[in-house]
Amino acid sequence: MTINELQALLQAKNQTPDVDAGREVACGYTCDLLSWVMAHGEPDMAWVTVQTHMNVVAVAVLADMACVVLPEGIEMEQEGLDKATAEGLAVLSSPLSAYEICGRMAAQGIPPRA
Image (cartoon, rainbow, N blue to C red):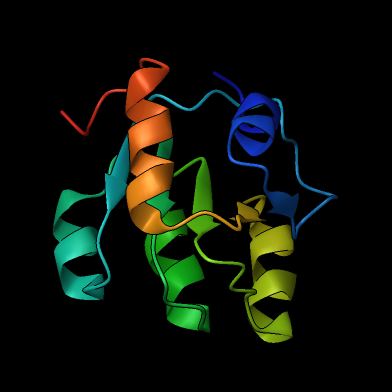
């Protein structure tokens, strides 16, 4: 599934429209503890988190993730969005809860991290 397809599935707003949303999403993960995500993040992952600061972008880029998905209509701070755009990281904001997001991703065959 591409980021564009994930965006539609999650009724999400793409907060980084200049980033390539044709990238494939290989797996999904949800966690809000950045050190834990640093240890468990994977390339092409869709990471669901309520965190919105610059360090989220750094962790996602470090792991070469496909995108960050913010639940419940949360929006990332502009500084983080600017950095995400510069790094080619998509940031989506969905009105759904983290639970609903993960359920939809799993139902569509996006596996958890390996």
